[in-house]
Amino acid sequence: MMLDAASKFDMVFMRLEETDPRYLSYFEVDSKGKQKNLGPSVLKDWEKSRSFVKFLKLFYMVTLNFLARYM
Image 1 (tube, rainbow, N blue to C red):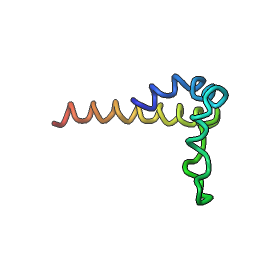
Image 2 (cartoon, one colour; image 1 turned 30 degrees about the vertical axis):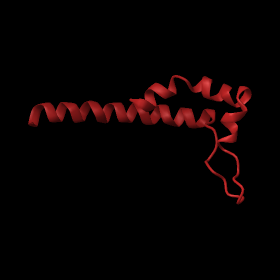
Image 3 (cartoon, one colour; image 1 turned 45 degrees about the horizontal axis):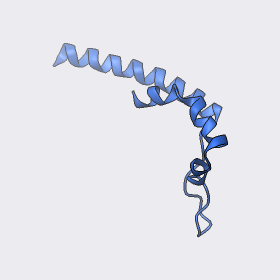
Image 4 (cartoon, rainbow, N blue to C red; image 1 turned 45 degrees about the vertical axis):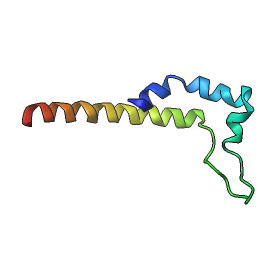
C-alpha cells in the first residue's frame, strides 16, 4: 500500500532532482569513496514498481480472501 501511494508522486520525486540539492546529496559518494545509496528513481523504476504493485494488490486480495474463508 505504501508503494502504491508513493507511485502517485513519481513526478514529484523526479522534480526533486531539479529543485532540491539536499535530495541529490543523499545519493552522493561518502568520504571513503563509497556510494551511500543507489541513486534517485528514474522513470523505468516507477514503471517497474507499478507492475509490482499490481501483483502485490492481487496477492493481498487473495490472502484476505483465503484468511476470511479458512480462519
